[in-house]
Length: 98
Image (cartoon, rainbow, N blue to C red; front, side, top):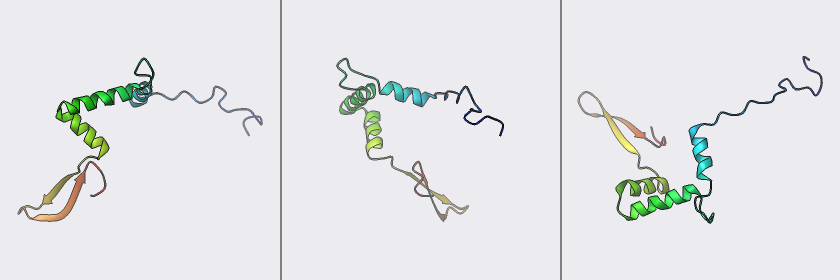
């Protein structure tokens, strides 16, 4: 055994995990977003998106619909040289069918 019993092979411990952008954004999103602490930053942002949707902005309506109902899968039919369907169904974006 290269180390004494109870001695660590890595005395400085595990190096700190490198933070990636999504981790940093999630941490910021959890911070207080209002002065009274009632809402987090992400809740403030989502409420603003709802306001945009109520104003009729299509991107906001689509954003809300995709996150509450799920994205509509794109279906594509593959055909042969004579344009006859090959009989293979491909669904993109949700991975349920292939």
